[in-house]
Amino acid sequence: MEISPEYFPLFSPKSYPQFKFTIKQVKVVPTKFTPIKRVDQIYCQMESVGDANKLYYLFSNTLGLPETWPPINRKTYHGGGVYTGNTWLKWITFNTKAYEMTSKPAKYYMLSVEPNGYERCLSELEKRGIPVKETGIQTTADSSGVEREWVRVSSFTETPFKEVNLGIAKYAPLAFSALTSTPEAETLDEHYRIMRGRLDAVDGGLLGVRYVKEVEVGVKDDSSMAAWQALLDPIKPVGETCWRIGKGPMVRLTGDSVNRIRSLTFRVRSIRRARMTLKALDLLGEVRDNTLTINPDVVNGLEFRITKLLL
Image 1: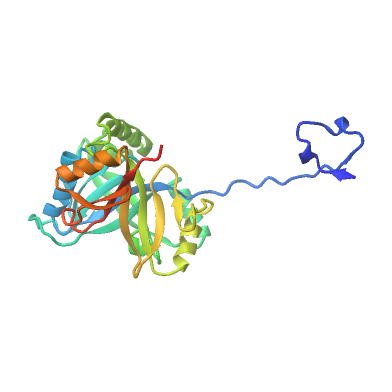
Image 2: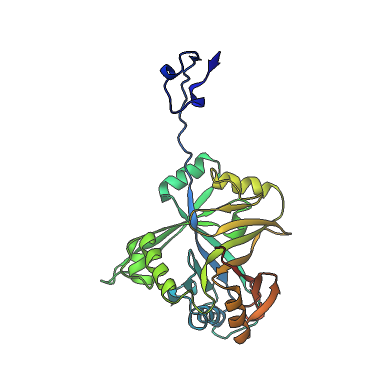
């Protein structure tokens, strides 16, 4: 009788002289590298500077989410952003000379992801046959007035990623000292730690926001599922079409006529508190069981969902 020793992990073969043990050598396979650390930015594209500022101040001043990127005018765009518990939410426009507010529809424009090491991530994506292209190096003036790099961006160039403007960003310390509300931070992790403290200090703002639960991405066909899995491997989906990526929002795929970002879902401390707040501010949209929406007419057609925190 032969019994493999894993059946008796706490004992040596000498403990069972009546059995003949077969010792097997097991090859240890290293854990596969995960190129994507988390979704770190979600961009909303607005028609005008007035529209971008309207939503920025709605979420920061009115709803009380801490600002992370104060509004700024640059040569090609205008934008600002807030911290939502595990990612940045930004509103931008490329119509930098249009200052009036409009009712024109906005859209979710871009997902930016934090890599597990910028150069290593790009190398891994090349091995996986997922093409990316460096699309921009942005500079800003440092404390002495010298223009220096603050971010380097590479973008995915093929379906289904290019339609949602999926990009990888590498930040220099100058990004935080010159452009964000945390000049004391030198890394993205330090920035997040400080912003988490600020969000907790205001109890998640008026809505009691804890974090962004998920980004819903619409896809046209089944091949998109395989493409996202190839990108995120070895992370396995939760259910069939949802991935939990590090400490950031989950990405959930749903069927659609086009590839696009469809919605964001926030988790809040109390759905009752959030509902009463939105109603009092005349911001309440649909109410579906334990999920609310912000009135899309107020946010230029964008879909923001709110659901309760799971304890």
